[in-house]
Image 1 (cartoon, rainbow, N blue to C red):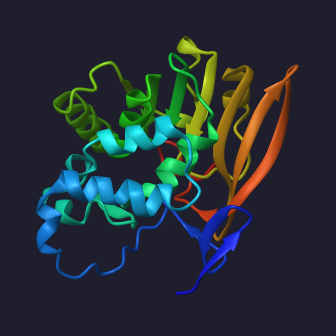
Image 2 (cartoon, rainbow, N blue to C red):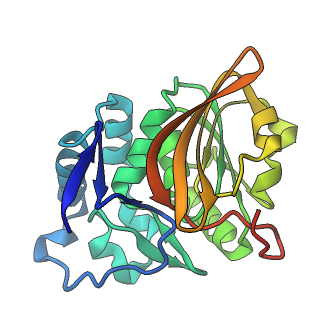
Length: 247
């Protein structure tokens, strides 16, 4: 497929393929050198991130540090550093490295920021944020994924991340306000509870829209008002409640 630039962002056709995709392309056999995960990780950072528009050094260092292959099913570990989503079970995927880096960069975070993530998934995005010295709170609606993420984060040394199994639409008011919020599933409109839990001067990165027509937005709160900036067209899994109903 033809790669084309939109401003400083790259898309495939007119659409950036992200975590939402449940149909994962056939990857073919892994390259022999894929067993050397550290080399693969360096190549990922150099060729998939730094060579494109990821310029934030803390983001690049975090992506270099976090062992992505430990956040994917064992059978797919040799594919972990390719720029493609991978299935993690329950109809969910781990986003490709570029979208993780892009969303992290958009936060423009500072060390020590309190960050709320909606949609824990495998725990990889939370680990990247923790590697950037954020105080991370993350919510997962699928109990099995939430429990597995807790195990993986503990095993990889990210023991300070707080994981909650629950409805991300409602946020985590007990720990609000948050300096930043990052959302990895798409509601049809911006959840009011998340707006309320964003601190003054805070930033939220969130995909919004109906299936097949979503936009990744950067929201900033200034003087109690929310300013919205469209970043790129995307496709994410929908945000759902405990009964599976789409928000």
